[in-house]
Image 1 (cartoon, one colour):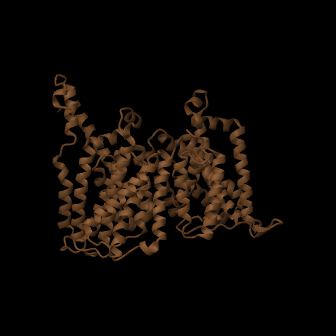
Image 2 (tube, chains in turn purple, cyan):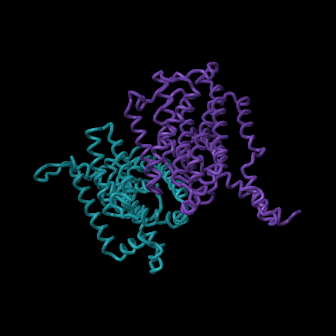
Image 3 (cartoon, each protein chain N blue to C red):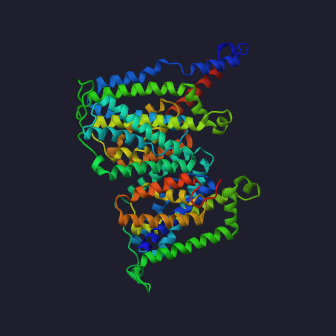
Length: 343
Length: 281
């Protein structure tokens, strides 16, 4: 739509148009997480292993956000793609077929994306409970296959001491001191984040939101609903595959935990904790969850699980937008108060 | 051989039937259902081991306690989410399952609880043409009786007709003057009570530990999805099929058994999304 078509005579229309146009524009605070992430590298050199894990979790949560938050595909089996990516890197490295890390990420993304595309083509015919079950079963199927094909995947023990080549032939991965991993993962996360940010604010991204909000109406206006859902699912799977590949490279091992229900449930909790369908929810949620679990889960594992349960119940009942949703509400509330008594 | 699978299937049926009816009736994705089965199992086993209550009264006690707890939960918490998006229901019930696991860990402890069957149910039973474990026979008989009772209750009583009406068309049922809220609470409590019963009856071979709710969740969900929502006979057949298949595969093909179950479920749900015995929408 060109600018001349917007009726400028009506002030409310132009306001709405301006807000809509402004929504996707880059804002100054969006650089903050990246500055903080870089600062973390210099301030806490001893916690870089934890930091690497956190960044990978953020990427995984973002990939789920695309499918669950934007397109509204309710999946309990997203770890299937994380595991697919991790196992791709692991198998290729262990059998000395491919050990270069960056192209390894691309291969992992392609493998996970293809699995996502193929499974999406059949799974996304269904909705609701059936879809939930199918995603769960697909993940279970992959997990069992990884468990059984022990000659290739290492079975229950997984594959360890993976030989990963240095990045650009220069920077070595050190499992004990993860400074290289941290920067490498941060770079990968930045690239993926920019890609997702462009994607969700594009017309394509808006059509996904439309499908989430009202599938029937999107059908009625002629949007190719299923094609959109399937491609979105495949892209989301590819990103999850990248996250899994990064995990395998950074830890130099891969095991069945990458494919389990635990991982799938955790990433879902993280996303909902931060607020889904908001891009930055993944970052906020991952930081809140990982920091809490890092300090609490080892000291009080039972209380941690109890607290997590209570948190989930409270979010589902009272705070559907997660932490960012609460922040938004507070902002709106403060704004209204200012309007009422402008003192 | 097949009898062992049938016995396992009966337990699956008893636990899952409540899940199927509540999901069909209320459209509620209840992932905490396994938690109710676990709590029931704990009440039953602890009542037997610590208070010395015999097996059958303990089962009744477990049923009543869990039905009461779940009725309170339903009124206070579940009812707020009936119209909420599926995602909220999933989160809420996963959270509830976590809370249940953690509470059991805190109050009872992480170790698995053994169930000692009464002497009359141990050992072998001679059926004339073959001998078999008495407890498996007991489970099969109990399962068939429960199935028949539920089926009669569902098809022949006023309450059952109301539930069926509400499953098929909630709005219409409501406008006919059926008290849906009360119906929901009663059905939910009854379904959870059945789960408790199944938790106790199955504790002997499924085991009973704090990880129970999530460990068997997929199994219960598969039974419901295959059997169809809100269909008692469907859940019965699905539970038997899965029980027998699972049991047989575990014996002959211990490695690949689960793969087969998952693959079967995926294919079946793609062929009939409403389940094997569900009515098409």
